Length: 459
Image (cartoon, rainbow, N blue to C red; front, side, top):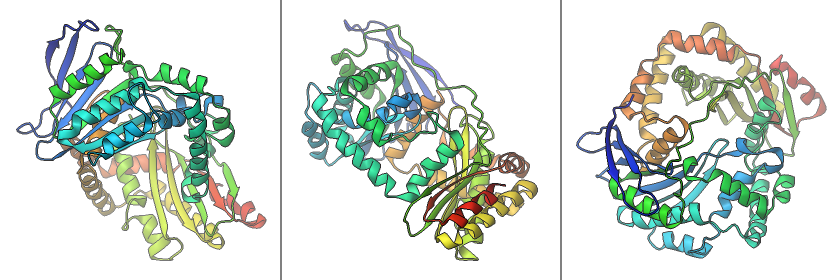
């Protein structure tokens, strides 16, 4: 998967005299697409992908913390903290942070997931040193003042309300809860109104100190970047903040473990006065490290990944029962989910669910045709490449790969793994995944008789 050549550079700073380890993980062509990694004393990892032909660069810092690391009382703390890191440091106010990037025409944002958090800035290549300084300052020097916690609480409660006003989004949280129950993975990333209201500045500060140690972080940069310069600038920023005080510390390993999802035949209905009923029918999937994930990706594409997919054709094209219908997979370190989403008129919900269930059962028993599998492989290969056509996507790929897998895979290797998927492998994973008894999450204005019939879809 990766080729590795090692070099070592020593630094004689007073903060850290140990050796930084540098590797070439993917050797590009004429320097294009080369991925390099340096591990600094103190456990901070820095990965870059070089594309000299572009004029932009995206710089990000990934934290090995997500909503699954929260206790029930801390639900929403990771996302709350994501907001607060934009509120000010010892060197910059919130306005200083935003105006610094705005002044050079850049863009800056962050996102929180169940297993990681990412902060990033995309700028012109000449403004990369500024982006590095600002983002590193946010990650290492956040003040988390009580007044900022109180002000931002209102914004987060509005974000929760906004999500709840979008049933097409909210139903996926409901499905996660249906499948995973009241567990860290089953709870919403945003938290709830009650948990967000209960979080204090002191509790969030403790959470910050525990999870934002350099050993829990991965720095990633992609675009017209020079690896050695990025390393020097990041190291200087972290040392200036006093964040590399433990030169012998080692990076935290990727998550592992084995969690089995035993939820089957469960139905959760959230009554809302919406124009459509929003449904997710699904079952346990695969962990993101499972080698069968390539075959599952092909299956997902053929079943509900495009306009030629089975579900789109059967539900929308042939019968016009839904505008939006698709399937998707979610892979975590130790488990996964497979789901089918559809939005339809409440009066049509049972027809849509029956068609979806019939298709899942048919593919589980009989598989897909060779033609469907071949088309899905081509579609997946093309979408993989097209999805990596900007520096932000490249930064996401190398940062997430280092944090979640501890390894890098070139685009050519990814395309090869997809192309190697055989029809038999797709049929085997279809039989295993789709042959399970599903569960169901529904949001909509269903009447009592309609709600009572929902269990038919998971019987």
